[in-house]
Image (cartoon, rainbow, N blue to C red):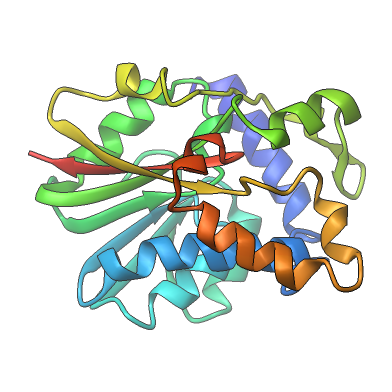
Length: 238
């Protein structure tokens, strides 16, 4: 990131850190976290793992239970501090302070869509991953109900005195993503997260949430996965 955009993003997430976990741990947000962990855990088992943009450590804490070593990095000091309070190893910064080929698995959720220089971010993720290792990189998918819902609803509040409009957001379809990858990354597959959910509030409807969550689990690996609002690209480094 450039200095100005990096500072803006850091301030945004520092402000957001106080309220980030409000409403999490159940319902829609818990479903999203569960799906992302289900994708990640098999690759993380007994591996050296890095999460780029670990936030408050909600995902990293669960991955640390199966990994040989789990490390996080986040731009925001406020977010990283909360992850450290969970007992996690977390670094603060926008550039990885790690050696080449240090990790078996590098993953990132809900981050790349907000990084202006996405090419540089993917190169860094690739650099720190060993040959034969994997990357799980999540993109915001315009081929999705989530995208349509965002267009209809507009920018929503995400914390105290903050809305989604306060941070830049990009959308990359399954057709776009291969063009973002360096030549030493092989696209293995996709997982779709939030394929069927039209808007998050439906998970507050009694009797709907459990069935829809189960349907989302099935859809994440089905041919419908290409329409996930969050699209996880499974990549292997050669």
